[in-house]
Amino acid sequence: MPSSGRLVRAKSNEREKSSLLPIPFQELIIFFSVQPNPIFLENFMVGYSAAVIRRQQFLIRCLGGGYNSGNKNLHYSSLRMQSLMGGGGFTLESDVISILRSITPSLDPSRHKGQAGKIAVVGGCREYTGAPYFSAISALKIGADLSHVFCTKDAAPVIKSYSPELIVHPILEESYNVRDEHKRSTSAKVIAEVDKWMERFDCLVVGPGLGRDPFLLDCVSEIIKHARQSNVPIVVDGDGLFLVTNCLDLKVLNCEVNYQDGTQQLLSLAKGLGGVTILRKGESDYISNGEEVSAVNMFGSPRRCGGQGDILSGSVAVFLSWARHNAKGGWSASPTILGCIAGSAILRKAASLAFENKRRSTLTSDIIECLGESLEELCPVS
Image (cartoon, rainbow, N blue to C red; front, side, top):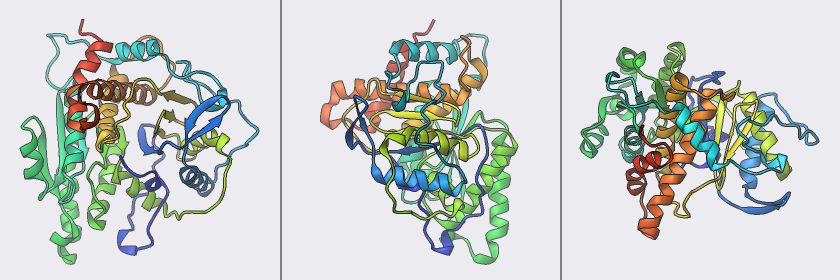
């Protein structure tokens, strides 16, 4: 699970600067996490990190946004997802089941390969090969038809060895492998290769196992721009958060903020970033697109093994693509909100099932194996 600091921390090293601009895109999802630090707030035990809240506030200020600590009239989702400041309950299991059943496509014999979702993960380098695999295979386990991984040439053989189910493209390059005089032409080749596939994808996941090589990040920033031009929704997680942060050219500001305004700050942050959807991972998952705040805290596991965030990114990508094409039931929330709620709930349910069997030895691979069972339990195949 990525450090929450990645959303707002940028190193001053010029080699790590990227040309990507802030993304005012309605179907961009940014993930960041908080570590539980229980405090008592309006009769609820909730988890917050002071450092995370400070960084959020600084990001809001840099974007020209702000919040009024006296304003508690948030626009709550019609799904009865309550924010902390509302003083109400969290998501009911019946709401999650209704959402899942309204966006999950039926298994119709007349459908052809690809109609249940084509997901692409951009990530995977010499150091990190597990994260892109976890994200891509989770998409397949939930029900996507095809899952691609665009990674570096060094990472490709390893990722391919994990599973023959994935379509792996060894096209990304890192600085050590490209001469300075060849960087422009190499970058153009990388972008052209990804562009050949772009319009086929229903959602793009950027960041799992991406690493922080400056040349690689520059190439990926161009891939994000091309995805936006093709109107492909983007999920940003892992080192993708570092990429976005680096582009905003932010520094950490040490200041104290009011814990009780954390949810309002999340709302302002999403709005300040142009209406992107933010899923804030933690003891409870909070979701906002700048207009509403939703929360999911059902199920879950006390086992905090690494890689669960990668499962979440792949899961959200699938449910987001389904929500854009299959949403029924008259939900007023956007497809990105519905996709985040569904992805969060399925991961928590799968983690709960895996923990029941494996207890302390639960690993990410155990949770992945429970994804199908979890979806079937909440949304049986008709």
